Image (tube, rainbow over all chains, first blue to last red; front, side, top):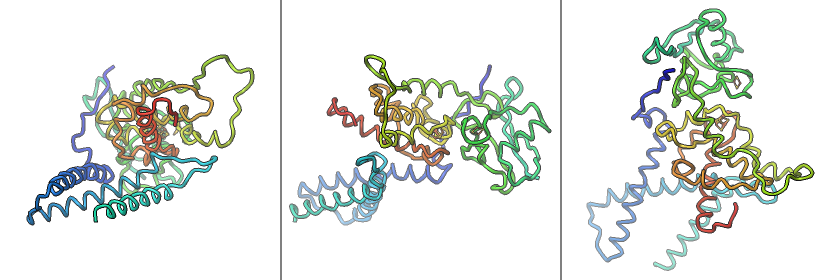
Length: 112
Length: 235
Ligand code: SF4
Ligand code: FES
């Protein structure tokens, strides 16, 4: 029997909107890495040149997009059941945002 | 009249699939599968495709309809304008026309030991289970093995060795069962297992039974990560 095996589609990520958004989300990790390096650079007491500002703004947008999509996907990994009642997704997302805010406030308090 | 554009692949005759058009009468209550059956019964008896229950239970009628993985018995012709294109499920080798090879999928299903694993003596009576214990895995037990989630998953289509959504959801169906004592860590926590998943989420969108395999996979990632640090914990 000869089965027909379709060739691998290199442009699969352009075929559907959801695939494209997914690939965009993966690419935001470049922005996250960039911001991390920038932080290390700045923490060593270096000045950040002005011409980098537009790039940093893009990186910031990528980080925010990354954080929001990451947190809104969190309920998929953490299914919490209390006595048979499944904690609804919005509470898990809300809890994550709460933790984020709390951590940011603590950091701000330490740094500022 | 509705025009069906059907992918044909006749091994030994066609080097690769070709499209053939058939006209089928308009009927408001006809699913794509009814159109295909009309073609087979009245126009061209050589057209091959799988089906059985016609009610979304057997999982055998999955095909690609206008680019989307669908159960053809639950996808209605009246919902489409113009030509309706029917192809075999993407991502699988084609045996003939709309029939794909399901052998590798069946091997994946059995690789996760999809049964209750118990140690010790056979019990003298049945295993009792509370409604809450049933609820913990029930959603994952609704899978009908239609493979639409595999067809929707770009990871699987690029790497056919990926264990894939339904097999992992099936593993979770047993992992989360209060009666099960098995351990599927070695099969699931691998590069071809849950760690192959990049969470595109399309499996869950494609699933006609609301199994939410993407959730099953992400949950096991958390379980596997915790288990790697604290081996005795069972989530
Ligand atoms: S998880 Fe859903 S889409 Fe995947 S095989 Fe099962 S029923 Fe079909
Ligand atoms: S024919 Fe059984 S699910 Fe469609």
